[in-house]
Length: 347
Image (cartoon, rainbow, N blue to C red; front, side, top):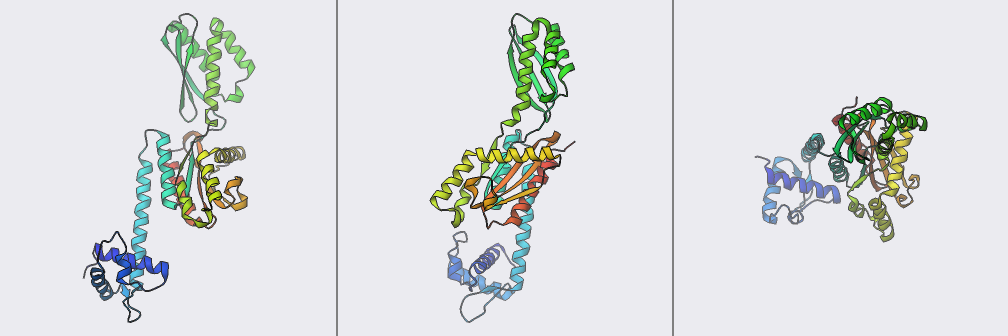
């Protein structure tokens, strides 16, 4: 006799119900599972077959059945296959390089929330002590040039700069050479007043243009300070009775939506990792009062740092009740962390 799809779904329903209640499961109970769309009579026939096949037992003369060891083994093996497929699907999704990093990070936030049933957050990556890679000035029209500024991590910033009077191609080329010779490979801390004065002197009548470009460079290097955070699964908080108190839930949801406090936590954690000089990719757990965020005192917050190319680092967080499944959360974070690290090969 074959264990077809219908029998499989009935067996899984019996096992899930028995795991929840500890009571023998009858056909009428299983018929209430809307996804089955089966009558009690049909279910009784299938349960009889499952018993004959050794997947379920009838401990008493009543109609209720419980899983046998064979039934449990089938359920566990199938569950493991599903989880392995889930991880494979997760990998497939992550390795499909999204056109924009922001879209990829939104996908990761959804995966974290869906896979854990808690709230999830992920920050855009930051680069600490950014260095300028190069500057490209291009003439746009008679009174404007475009400054394309590339910093570590291949982050590109464009800035339109107004010029007084027409600037020929030869002059633009000379300014490109001047700026790149003196600024390439420098961090913001390295670009001091003395250096700026020197460059402006050598630029002569175009010192104002050079000053505007240097301002744009400083703005590009500082750009990572504007940490963007993507959230997913905030409503999962309402699945846990201890967090559904109206005031608590409101505070938690507001904090998740407003993001400012989480941004501060993530920024400080990334800064600490950079200052310590380590990889900073470990998993950190804040339980209840350990959380630096006041509204999260009834929650646990688990964070992990991911790293992309050229030292770009961001942070993932899972927020849930104190009784969260820490093992599953850590495993999920580690999986996504590894896949993001592999997706953007570090050099």
